[in-house]
Image (cartoon, rainbow, N blue to C red):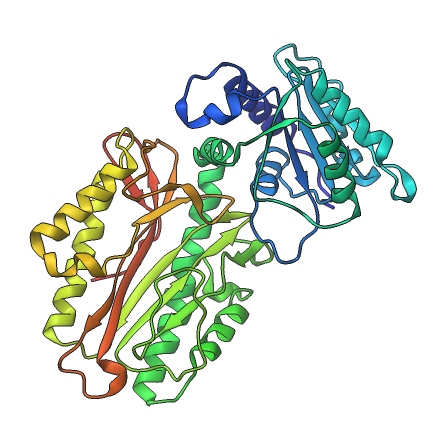
Length: 426
């Protein structure tokens, strides 16, 4: 439970913005939200879930994740059930004399764990909101625990029509305010510094000394270094840093260009070494991917330079007003024209929006995404080639290789985007 006060100014500004979009916008990207009579956000405790839409919405509104808390947004106002301590934290949101702001009503959880009466107040509020029939939910989320079970049981009994609003909320949260951009910039520079000052130096030393070090050992070193200020930019609090996903280091022919991949226990091979790491600062994500080439052949060098050119083309198209599918197609057409033999080896998408969640799956740079790029969005712009053959490979590990580069990019407007991870590639 946070020991600091609720940031009232940010809370009310974002709450008003959310309600304004819900009630008045005609933006197609939030249609699922505009069609519901109410929507709910229930956050439980789950050690295995790092990201969820409900916790992201909470962090965006309140500045913190408040577990075992249920928020119901009705046309009349916002109803929140939480423990006594969390209600005290949220207290400044109540009784605000602002006719433009939705009313906030706080309900303290009952002692002993019987929350039936409190939950019934939420159900009643939903039924009295507009038509009282359709409710927006986050369809894939199902937090465990007695409190969450009790909420779902009473909610199901009410037999509401449910609508998944995950993509709509993801879209709203994708457009960052200036203070959010500041946090992402700090996260991005932390990723750059961690790679440049620690990981790259470690790898160079291993190569120069011809040491045998496992990929997993390098990852362990990275995780330890994250709390060391000498590997971080100034004005960054190490206690507010965490990795967006376990860092991934791959070499020696075994490559998977997915963020679900894990670093194996094989010895670092001095050929193509792919390093993926993303650092999160105060809940906001960044990402950096680099390929380190050790004594590359001319063909490997040429393919790598081509991949950098492809990323440059994509960045030049990542501007407000362009459709994400068109950004993707501009990259695909470039590959078809310049190196058609590499088309089948490309990653299936060229990145996605990042923020409080590492990946916003509804906003991917992919062939079927018709959403428009918007000013204030931040992208993980990543391009890769896998299954490449090295005819000059002197050992089994060198015969097959992959190449991967990725950066954190901020969309400014319809004329430019900014690279937030300025780490050497060429």
